[in-house]
Length: 254
Image 1: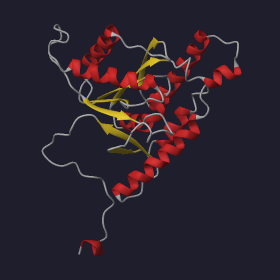
Image 2 (image 1 turned 90 degrees about the horizontal axis):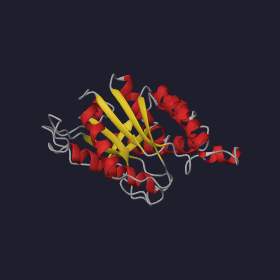
Image 3 (image 1 turned 180 degrees about the vertical axis):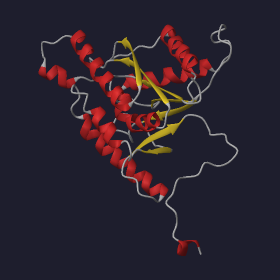
Image 4 (image 1 turned 90 degrees about the vertical axis):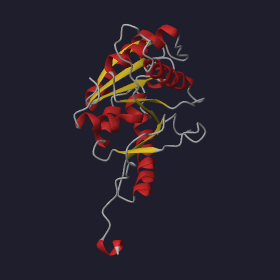
């Protein structure tokens, strides 16, 4: 584990897939180990399809269906996944749950962590998750957080898309785009696994196209689909990161 590991923390069963599925698949194809932690199944607040078709259903049955859907989606993307089984709407993160997340960061020691955007008043479970992850990674950076752990760790933390289509209301403005043209169809196939949320296919095709349009404009190259992220801390390197652009024509360089 370490420099080729990514940890994704998702409030509900589908969030990691809809917001970062193309990026997850892209990194998995490149040989990275991608591990997803799903805090809740989203049975109470994110399973409208189930409740409409099963008005006499139970939360327990819905949770079992959601877990199966999420496992299937992770398999399509090439990620491993674990389920905490916390309750949603509201999701409560206390000290013990925060320490659990800190422990997982230290166990995996990922180079990259992906999770929800900090401000999401249209879905407070997302907001609770993002703030818990920030606390977990900052806890993990302290050498005394778990005294038996020989070394501390602070990964690169990125926030993915807030609740759509309310991104502007939630003050989400990407500063990083990942081109997912090569893995969009994989993402779309994974999203189809979430039968309890049939609207997701339309919503996230739209946003993949929207972010792709933005990314193509910034990069001045052809990009059809992209995912947007916000970096948590400043980037420190020995050189500026360069945007991937299409080669200019010889006449343009003169």
